[in-house]
Image 1 (tube, rainbow, N blue to C red):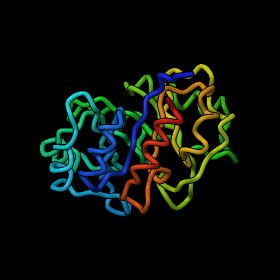
Image 2 (cartoon, helix red, strand yellow):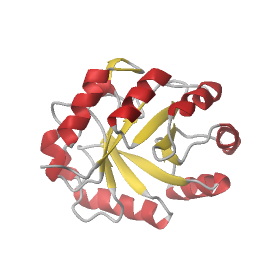
Image 3 (cartoon, rainbow, N blue to C red):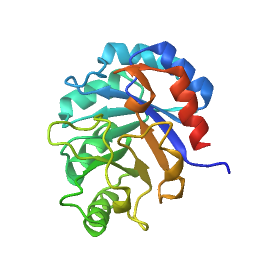
Length: 214
């Protein structure tokens, strides 16, 4: 059975990895603009990296609690398509920042299975939908990190009738992505599950992940 779910590979630091991913048919490339991350790239690096991305593959800029000045500078230098807010940004902050640079945006929610419920997640998604988000990304909560931990959350907490398309992230690998095909999601976002080291992608794992999805 084939799948029409989309795939974003995130955390690239090397042009050759991007070229391989594009040739395999990935839908979106994610670049991390959060200096504490081991996968972070500078604006200068990113401007070079996206030269490897053809027109119909989206470039997603992952940011964490970024300032207005930093986002404007990023948008003026790097031709990305979508902002991924991955910090503590409120719906109002996301809307204001995205409008500032005229970009579509998605928001990452870190799911804490100790405190979150399907109902609370649905309600939070509603607030970001009302603020203009294009999709919502669900990732695992970790008290010391804003994603990229390789940890999964309880997928039974994914709402069936969310007001935004859902992107699933957190601990995905070529080995565990197949069972997720029946979940109410629109796309996958994977980083660590396709790497040989942080920021260094593994061609075999990228191919295996896309093969498992499609």
